[in-house]
Amino acid sequence: MDASTDRDAGDGAGSVAPAKRVFVKTYGCQMNVYDSQRMGDALAAEGYRPVDSADEADLVLLNTCHIREKAAEKVYSELGRLRDMKQEKRADGREFLIGVTGCVAQAEGPEIVRRQKAVDMVIGPQTYHRIGEAVRRARAGETVVETDFPAEDKFDHLPMAKPKVTRKRGVTAFLTVQEGCDKFCTFCVVPYTRGAEVSRPLARLVEEARGLTEAGVREITLLGQNVNAWHGEDAAGSPIGLGGLLRTLAELPGLERLRYTTSHPRDMDDDLIAAHRDLPVLMPYLHLPVQSGSDRILKAMNRKHTADEYRAVIARIRAARPDIAISGDFIVGFPGETDTDFEETLRLVRDIGHAQAFSFKYSPRPGTPGAELPDHVPEAVKDERLQRLQALLTEQQIAFGRSKIGETMDILLEKPGRKPGQLIGRSPWLQSVVIDQPIGEIGDLVTVTVTEAGPNSLFAVPASSHMRQKRVS
Image 1: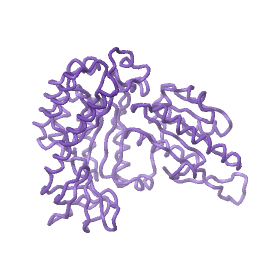
Image 2: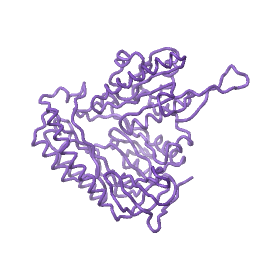
Image 3: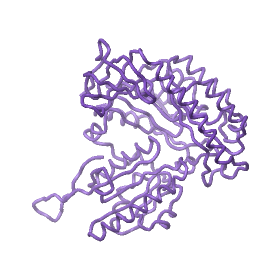
Image 4: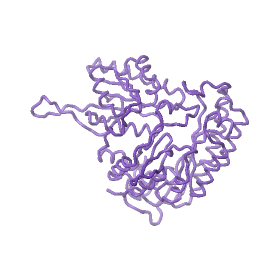
């Protein structure tokens, strides 16, 4: 977020009034992180500067996620704490506004202000461009609920961050290229909270990405609920998919690394797979959720692919990029899942081999078809299955990390470590890499040799010729 101050229009001397302060608490996915930053950029124009806690703030936004279990109840619990804080600050004559944004805001809508009257604003994901107006209305005493799906594109109205703000955020950045979902998996609320699949225009994405790289960003991760469903037109008006977008962005000066998430198996087309083969800047890491290894459960989930079709997609990707690391999502205990179904999931995990994965117990989301299915699995069974699955996935993650010991690789230095002189970088496979010896500065791409592997991180020393390329100042 950008720092800004309000000027008192009534003061001929142009005195500066204290800046208003905003704290944004972000839940859930990378797209929410990106959305929080864009809302912060919009609020900078309203005179708000970011602070690190609700205690310091005049405005608190909870940017919520509806994917995890009991997500809404966690938000209401936090709102209770903020209500008490609001009462204390109002007693001292201080302004304190509370806003709920994100997918819980979209799903719950007016119910939020009915249950928690301290809330001043409820703003869904498609109306973030109205955040400034909403704050002005709330400051005037109105309770604002904006959860429609407007005709205008919010990205056309959200301001770009100033270069100094982008630099402060670091050398890596997110860029939302696609929103919404048309797949309608029976367990998922995204089609109802984010709407239909929409792809941002190529020219706007290139413009935003160029602004990031010119401000010093060296790695961009493209985001979307189904990011590989992105489609658009190139400069000649010909249709292109995500592979074409990646090729276009790969030409930007100063951009060293590209990633994308989250993908759907049905949208892994030949051109995108070829991009993994052809583009050195496209990192060899792919998050491709499968959710289950049982065809029967996949059909009940409305995933529109089988376990063997998923295996075939992975085989094609690995043929194009043999060093690629695979990540995935898994849900255990979907309604009707039997022991046999679960064993099929374990078999798929063993067949694929994962560098990383996320796994969860199924929890019904109100309004989704899955919530209405019969034969819900007992919690104790879900617990036991999740423990077995996570043990296998952890074993694979540790093995993948250990396979890098002795390997020389390029890493991007992202931040200081906890110890003096320590630096933290990121491997091409998204692993955190710790270096305790002098090697460069944040933003440098350096070459290291891995000496150790922990459960979640690698440890490395500078290679004999460690500086591959300095960052662009």
